[in-house]
Amino acid sequence: MLDGTKVQLRSVTLGKYVSAENGGGMNVTVDRDIASLWETFKLWRVSDTKFQFRTFGGQFLTWSGTGNLLTATADSASSSETLYVERNDDMIHIKTLGGSYVQANAENQLSADYLGVPGWDANAATFQMSIVENNLHGDYQLANGYGHSKAKEVLTKHQNSFVTADDFAFLSRHGINTVRIPVGWWIAQDPNPPPPFVGGSLAALDKAFTWAKASNIKCIIDLHAAPGSQNGMEHSASKDGSVDWALSPEYISKSLDVIDFLCVRYAKHPALLGIELLNEPSAAGVPLDVLVSYYKRGYDVVRTYSSTAYVIICQRIGNANPIELYEADIGDHNVVVDLHYYNLFDPYFASLRAIDNVNFIYNSRQPQLQALDSANGPLTFIGEWVNEWNVSNASQFDYQIFGNAQLEVYNGASFGWSYWTLKNDRMHWDFEWNIKNKYLLLGSSSTKKPNILLLLALAIAMLLLQYLIKQNIEIELGQQKDDALYEQLKFIGKSFT
Image (cartoon, rainbow, N blue to C red; front, side):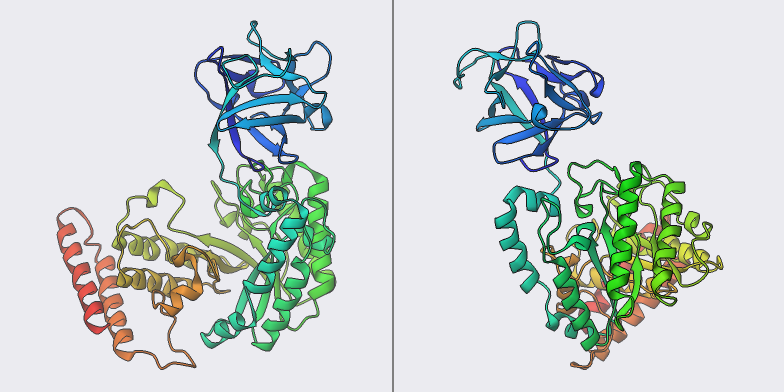
């Protein structure tokens, strides 16, 4: 029951779901046979036993203390919107801070007037709770879920061990010259950020800059989590999946203050390459005019402290064309547009075969990059990509071909690329694992001579594969030829490996 968990409540006596009429802003009824959006509530965690329930429309369940009825009419949450939750497996009781238990009454309403203390039998104060979604596991959920002391312990251990100077040395040995480091907005108030966040991220960033300088690596600082959340995802530290950043001038102003803070601290550091003003703003939740205004103001903040640092602006994710940022005239020099390329997260990629994915890199990604780079505007940066896809049972050689196609195309970006991410519990998202296990082949290493035969095999395979794609034989009757040639390429790779 972390922040943002979506739940539905069903009365065990009435057999009906609790519903916020019209999605919120009105009365609460217990009269729905089937649960949908109006019957779904997002949890705001106050403690292990106390929660607030937010409706689809953004209002909170509230008890005014008069008339005993609960409604969904509170625009913000305080004591009247805070409720105790007692659990017994999937059964719960709800109790107000005043000590009254909530029941589903005979009029199909929620009322805080159950007499006595309910047991776990079939009574009006017992509800079956279904957790329908629990996808947010970000900084906010970690800190608020553990509580300050435990979260501090967990994050301090993580910050002291997860990434070290050895990792920067590894990157340098393999030809990586820049790292993109995501930070949350609360870093500007470190070491005592506002609850529930805990301190330590600023000290970790300082260490990263020291290690980067020692390994001759440059740093991009990326504002990955903005106040209010710019995309509703866990990596933006969203509390409950809402996208509130663009709705609040205060949130936007606070974000600019974070950029100012980072510039004051790092603008003159020899390892700084650039500042990314915001990561992955949502096209659905962040209007273009609001974003462009923020980017222009952010550019001016960076230029106050540095005439040379690159100012990086990220494309909107969702239904948006990155050309909108090339046409926005954000600043007059050293402006970079960050594009994120994944053959994932879209139904289009769900059933593609290995060669289909490679085909997409050459036939879709490459022309878009070339068009954007020829637009005579900002530089182009593939700020996130990964050597992963939806292909089942893919071989090591399949991954090598896919990775090589991406490297070849993304190397053509005028500002280069960065991989998401350095380390991960999912192996193909882990850059170090990919390199060490030869699923991603960057080329020669200063500590190990390259396998010339393997590289030659890959070169031959890629030439043949590009020929295949350019000849466009992956259609109708040509499909069998395509499959046969791809199998030959896999055999070439295996024989040399």
